[in-house]
Length: 325
Ligand SMILES: *[C@@H]1O[C@H](CO)[C@@H](O)[C@H](O)[C@H]1NC(C)=O
Image (cartoon, rainbow, N blue to C red; front, side, top):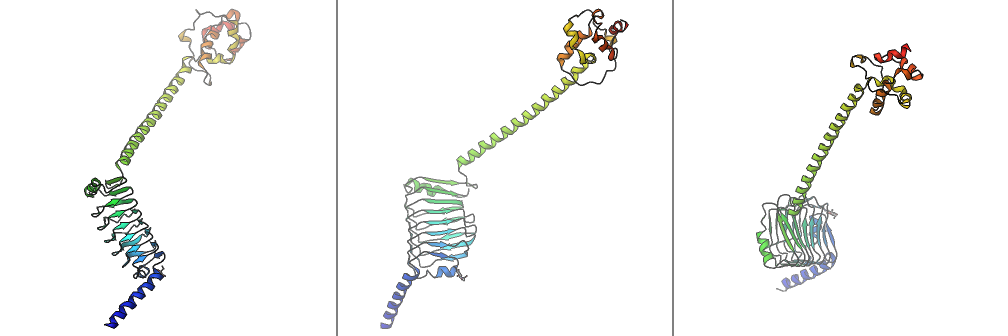
C-alpha cells in the first residue's frame, strides 16, 4: 500500500519536473518523436508549430491546453493531425496549404480564444469539431469539403466564412445562424469551384465583354481592308480616264497662263492614242487642267510649248497644224 502511494507521488513529481522542462516554451514538431516529447504536457505554455518538413501522421497525445497557437502550414507530406485530448487553444488554430492532409482529429477541442483558419487543404473532405463550443475570433473554413460538422457550436465572435464542395450542405450551419451563433457575419457557400456567386457573375460579364471586343476589332479590321481595296480600285481607274494629258503634263503651266481655250475643239474619240509613254501616276487636278492645255489653238501656240508638244508622240489630228506651222 505504501509502495503504491510512493510510486504515485514519484510519478506526479516526475510529471511536474517534465512539465517545467518541455512544456514551458514553444515547440516545432518535425516528426512523431518530436511530438512524443510533449506526452507529459497537460498544458503547453507556448505555440505548437508543425514543420513544413513533417510527413505522415502526427499524433499529439495528452496535451489538453495550448497557451499559444497551433500552426501547420505548407507541410505537403502531412496526412493526418491527431490531438485527441486537446481541449483549448488560446492563440488560434491555423492549418493551411497542407496538400496531402486528409483528416484533422481534435475531438475534445471546445474553446479557441482566437481564430480558427483552415484553408487551402485540397485533400481534406470532411471536417468536424464535435465538442467545439466557442471561438473568440474568426472562423474560416474554406476548401472542397463534402461535410463540415460543428454540432456543439455556441458562439463565434469574429466573422465566419465557410465554403465547401457542391455536395456539401449548409443547412445545419444555416440553422446555427438563425440561432444567433454567429455574432459578426456568416457566409456558407457550396460549389465545386469554391467561387462566390458574385465572383461567378463577374467572370460571366468579363467573358461577354471580351467576346464583344474581339468581334468589334475583327469587324474594324475587315472594314479597313475593304476601304483600302475600294481606294485601290479608284486609284487605278483615274489615270486611264485621262491618259492624253500625261504627255503634256511636264509643261502644263504655260498654256494655263495664256488662258486661250476653245471648248468647241474637242478631240475626236477616234484620234485617241493606243499606246502611251510610261509615266507615274498623277493627281486628278493635273488631269483636269491638261484638257485645256490640249485644246490650245494653233494661232497662239507659236512659242515654246508648241515645241514641247513635238517632243512627245502626236496624239491627235489637232496637233498637225502645230507641226505645219
Ligand atoms: C525528428 O526531427 C528532429 C528535428 O526536429 C531530429 O533531430 C530527429 O532526428 C528526428 N527524428 C526522427 C526519428 O526522424
